[in-house]
Amino acid sequence: MRVEVVYALAHAQDIVALDLDEGSAAGEAVAASGIAARHGLAPAALRLAIAGKAVASGERLRDGDRVEILRNLAAEPNAARRGRARRSRRR
Image (tube, rainbow, N blue to C red):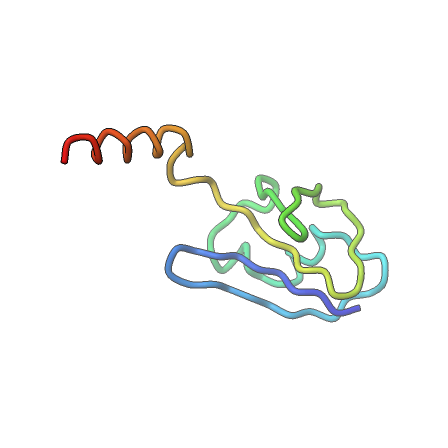
């Protein structure tokens, strides 16, 4: 089956297309992609998603799935919104 593993940074994306055996798991796809090693990520601490929905590393993949390696948010969304509102009121 054909799947993709994606890790998106602010300035670039790392995308690896793989051919895996049927029944492979999301964590196996990430390991086979080599993305975690290239970016210095701890495999045990990775958060993964398929089609924008969080999944466990043991989640079985289907042909055409895109496994996304999630990053931490740069800022908590509500705090960022409050900061923008404060700055706009000062103008």
